[in-house]
Amino acid sequence: MKKTNHFSLVLTALLVLIIAAAGISQDKITKSFQVKKGENLSVKVSGDVKVESWSKDEVYVEVTGLDKDDAEDLKMKQEGNTVSVQLKSRHSRNGASFSIKTPEQFEFDVKTSGGDLSFSGNFTGNVVGTTAGGDVKVQNFDGNVVLTTAGGDVVTGDVSGDVKLTTAGGDIVAGNIGGEGKISTAGGDISITSANKTISVATAGGDIKINNVGGEVKASTSGGDITVGTVKGAAKLNTSGGDIKLSGANGSISTNTSGGDIRLEKLYGSVSANTSGGEVYVELNPDGSDESNLSSSGGNIKLLIPENAKATIEALIEIYSKKDLKGTYKVISDFKFDSYITDEDEREIRATINLNGGGKLIKLNTSSSNIEIRKLNK
Image (cartoon, rainbow, N blue to C red; front, side, top):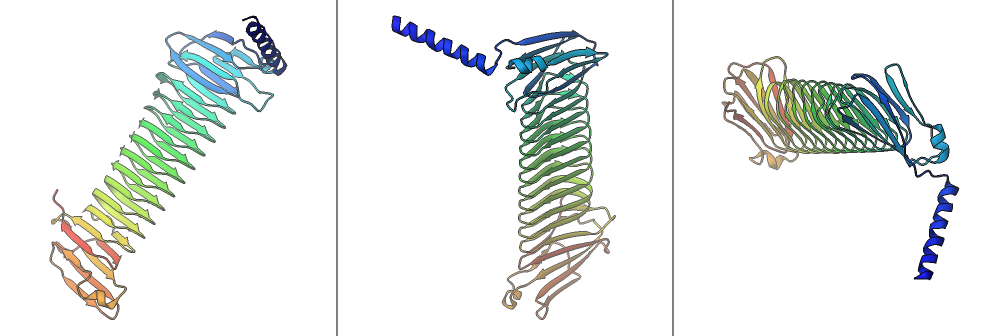
C-alpha cells in the first residue's frame, strides 16, 4: 500500500509539472453583463462556441480550456448596446470552449476560427455565424440566419426569415424556412423540410430533398438525386448523376439529368424534361403559355395530359437498327393520331396528335424506346 501511495504521489506531481510547463489553466473564466432585449453579441474567438437562450436580461460568458497566454489575451467588454468577446489565440490548437447565455431576443455576430458553433433555445433576432473548421447547429430562430463553415455540417431548426447556409465539406439539414433560402455545399446532402418563398439549393456531391416550396425552386447537384414536393411557382432542377422527382409545380418547369429517370407529377404550365440515360414520366396540364419538350437518349417516355387540353403533340422515335422498325418500338396513345409514319429510310417513327384542334407544341423524342400518350384523370 505504501509503494502504491508513493507511486500515486509521484504521478500526480509529474502531471502538475507537465500542466504547468504547458501553461494550461484549469480554472474557468466567467463574466456577466446587464443588457436589454434586442441588443447585440459580437464574438471573435478560436474554439468551440455554444450560445443558449434564457429568461434573464443578462449575458453570461464562461470560458474554459485557456492557457495562461490566451487567458491574458481574452477580452470581454460591453460598449453601448454590444457585448463583445474576443480572443486571438497565439496557438494553432483550438482547445478553448465558450459557453454564452443571452436573452431570447438578441442579435448575433459570432465567428470562430477553429471549432463548432451552436445555438440552443428559441431566439428572436438575426444571426451571422461563421466557423473555419467545425459543425454549425442552430435551433429555432425568429429572424434571418446566415451560417458558414469551411469544413462541417450545418443544421437548423425552423427559421421565420431569410436563410443563407454554406459549407465547403458537409451535409445541410434545415427545418421550415419562412423567407427566401440560398443553400449550398461542396460535398454533402441537402435536406429541407419546407420553404415559404423562393429557394436556391446546390451541392457538388450529394442528394437534394425538399418537401414543399411556396415560391420558385432552383436545385442542382453534380452527383445525386433530387426529390422535391409541391412547388407553387416554377422549378429548375438539374443533376449530372441521379434521378429527379417533382410532386407538383406551376409555371415553367425545367429538369435535366445525365444519368437517371425523371418523374414529374401535377404540372401546370410548360415543361422541359431531358435525360441522357433514363425514363421520363410527366403529368402535364398545359396552360398554353409556352412549348414543352420531353426527351431521352435511351428510355421510355410517358406523357399524361387531360383530354380537354389544347395542344399539338409531336412524337419521334429514332431507331438504331432497321429490324426494330417493325413493331419493336412504337407510339401508343389514348388519343386519335392525325398522322403516324414509320420511315425506314430515316429510321424513325413519327406521330402527330392535334388535341382539341391543336395548340402549343409538345415534343416527345427518344431513341430505341417507346412513347406513351395517355389521358390524365384530374
